[in-house]
Length: 278
Image (cartoon, rainbow, N blue to C red; front, side):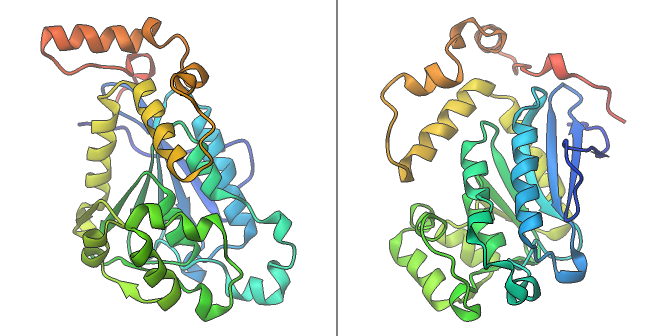
């Protein structure tokens, strides 16, 4: 599948620790890529960066052309969590300012893919396992560091890992601070796929392409249905659909899905966002 080149955009706010990019598929539809951009710190972030992730995800989620959000990185590593120098200087003193990137990922109606290379440690690992999918290069290393570096992380950011890998494995990851190869991470269900580093972007494009060949509102409803697993279940049957897409059966994408099925062809749900590839 042909795509345009990545183009940098401004997501409504000036970014200091992140980069926001967008590209289009030849058949229509766009993806956004949010990149960690502190290579001098192995992409360790301050609360400025964590807050920028939230703002970027929220901005992408409101863009009607966007089908998938990718979170990736500049440099050799996905990231190593919080900037320890910033934390040691009192950066964590005001925990009321702690951005909830997990909630931003969970509340997004667009699927979120983490594309991981190199170290994926601490807060970056939290973020990766909150994403809907995690695709890793064969040089990736996963793990937590909180108990080792006296991080006060607790609550949902910790316990939600049990829904990904199971309670025993989650406790092992958090309470032993071991490091895991991508093949070990794949075996325990922490990630979805492992590919050579040189093929990482191609693999992510393939996953995006497959997602974009499915009914967008169906994907949103399924995503939110899964998000309810580790949250107080406040939805009853039908309410997710009423919240996200009350006119689901009247949407052009629904009609296109039916027509493509009967015509035995691949549907094209993103014609309205079509843009010539470069």
